[in-house]
Amino acid sequence: MTTDDASTGSGTGGAHAPEGVRLQKVLAAAGVASRRVVENYIVEGRIEVNGRVVTELGTRIDPATDHVSVDGVAVQLDTAKRYYMLNKPRGVVSSMRDEQGRPDLRRFTDELDERVYNVGRLDAETSGLLVLTNDGELAHVLAHPSFGVSKTYIAKVKGKVTPQTIQRLKNGVDLDDGPIAADKARILQQQADERHTMVELTLHSGRNRIVRRMMDAVGHPVVDLVRRSFGPLNLGTLRSGHLRPLTPAELGGLLTISRSVDTEPEEDDE
Image 1 (spheres, helix red, strand yellow):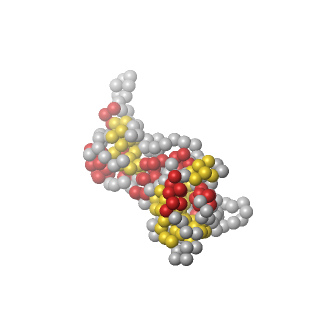
Image 2: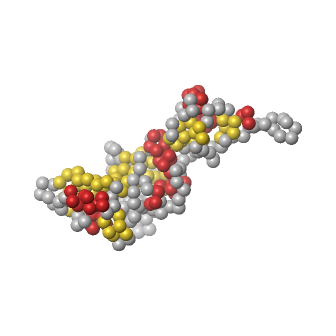
Image 3: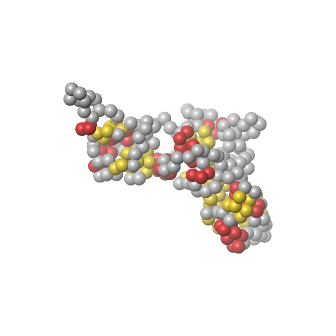
């Protein structure tokens, strides 16, 4: 990051062309606002570059390496990056090419202009929210279980779930690969015949088939499972089998979280 008045020549004292691109030009190209509006943001101290508030209109940045946020929300400066939300149906494997010939994610991505990849996985019988992107850095971070991104699931399970069972899920259950506790858990609906219960679980673990294994451990096997949210993203009214680009606010939320850590990736699989 540089400012125009700081970019002067050396030796002979002659000036040379300042490095980088003007901040307002970069943010306008990224779709944040017009250059004039961005200039107001700069003067008002609403923009940070690499964690530092900038107020100089002459500020120049390198869009390839500098991180910029507006009002505390990260901005993607690379306009070639793409981000989508998919409501994955049951029966589709979370792979761009399944070696066993099962239905995979290509049916949703083949018509896109760019190649994208899934962030983490949902098992074939689990439906719901899946992020697809060509941003390897973001995918690298979000797929790591220790990153702690929260995920909310709606599970239809066998039997009548009691408040005591919900408390047990929140206190933690022992599984083969160690104990696990839900961040939140609640009963959504009990069927009149008590054959099934709808349960909502929120957790940040990325361990394999974790919701199914937790419910098995408390004696209520999962019949149907949907992931409704992933970090700041929520399925909302997106229909099963449909794909849409993330909104600027959704993307900003993901980028803000992903830039706060630096870890090695490890996929989740629920």
